[in-house]
Length: 373
Image (tube, rainbow, N blue to C red):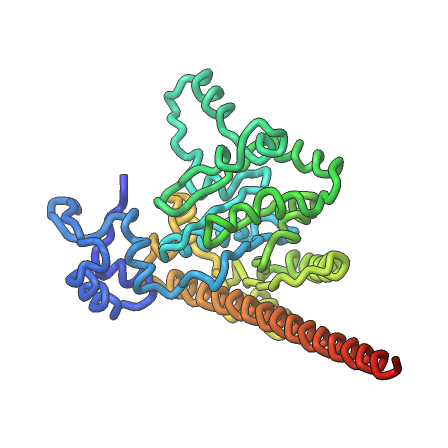
């Protein structure tokens, strides 16, 4: 059953209370769906069901479609640092802005699959045999790899009409091992999954396991941008220094040019060590956002409800921080697209110039030979 959101809450979801006037104007001009009556306790109110929000977000939101289809990898080598929380919030934020989004689950723990609500409808009273049969019918990347399913077969819709997922299944372990036995093993995900998905989706998000494995290296090869959480605790602080070294080595070895975006997470403003680590990240980590995700009960509740923080806690400081965070992420990805586009145009221009010089030299040579005869 859809949640309903009144006008004020819709405006808060998209980051500006004053948007309510714009939304009212768009509604009167029939540029967005009309609000509907819904029951809230003993009274009736007017608002929009969740499924209609993407049409509003496309008109008034801050997370616009990128200039081209984009793939994002969410990865770090430590668990419990809000990695899947970032993936969930990025996916729902983009979908709430009218983007067609597909999440590719690559973490055997299946956190993003659960948080997006794919397998949350298990009834405690359900017969075990029926449940096992239903779980066996869930197709994943391993079925696609083995030829037992098409790519279309393994994509399922979740939560919003324009939000989809390739769910994690236990067979991901076997798929990871199988990738060792094929040619161009680092490119299977890019060539067989991500590039085809980018033909049909505006944003593809890969949620990886918190360790280096073949699926993770495949995701890094396939991504336009890496989003990596930085937990503001001493253990992750030490882990990051090793992680950043391996990441640079891998990018250099594979000649990759994805944008690296680092997001501080789980920091506490009333703890000195947490603040010291946060400030160190700001000062020393290139690509670090200037805002992150604090430790918050609201963030945990939102994930349990299969919602983004902006939906669940709209108007609260944690939601406002999250909105500003995704504005920064959006800007970083847009700028990386522009940079790569400019580099491509520059290379094409150089090729044309060199081609012109070569043709001119050939022409001069021909003229000289002709004159000599």
